[in-house]
Image 1 (tube, rainbow, N blue to C red):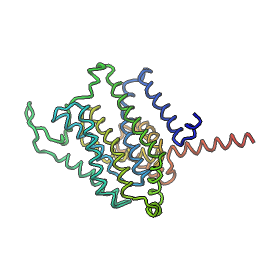
Image 2: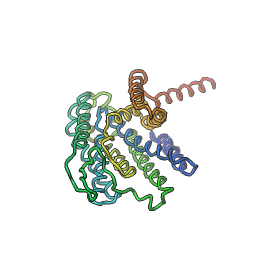
Image 3: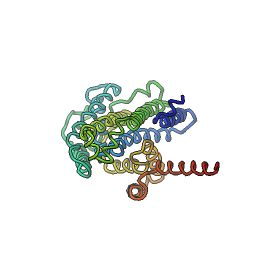
Image 4: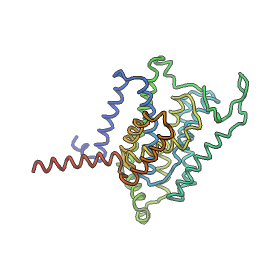
Length: 340
């Protein structure tokens, strides 16, 4: 036990187990369905942001292409379920595989440059993907009721391709709990992967490339190789979140590629603490809580999120987790001085 507590990841594992235990109990404490739905959104956003944090905060890659990978996972899952009549349980892993393939293509094209050029290239990929979906008006399959179905759904979204089967298994009253635990398991896997990366020796290589690229390369660390590794590995869980989104909501549309959603997730990562393990989850929780009172004021909400990014990036880049760590260090110092 003493050996475990001395391990660098021990505190993170203990925190993770406690959080998972609390989240496992919530559905049985009489919590309203509305809040279960909100927590499912938290699971999706936290999974995306935790992996984006590995790419940007740990790997130092200024990528804005995570939503394209998320969208590939969601659309591939929906396409196979709708047009090939696959179950969502079968199409979901294929969606994840296509998301990883998409990340390899995006990485090969964008990771040979750095900084603002990577950000612009990856943002352009997201914009082009959204534009292709929005302008898709070619008839892919005639509908029985008349009219045509578009391959991507166009502006109407992809719908009517089934669900994860929780309604048949748990009934109409408790099906949401089944989807809730699937989302929780997805987030637990994503966070476990983040802990492994951050606390492992390979994480040191990523941080070295982020903090001092020239020195890391001079020590034999291949920038392109390691950045491709973190970019593609994190896409596994980003694609997983995309497939879960498509499966849970039963609809996939181009709104998941909107700049407003990208801005929201970026704000969550920066406000929570860019490059910190628990920062993304803290940021998602904080901004989801802020989003609720502002949900009827979309223009002010986006302005508030943009303002938060500016404030935290300029004046407190360590984010919420950094503030908590500072307060904890101050408290320990005071206790130590009191004992003296």
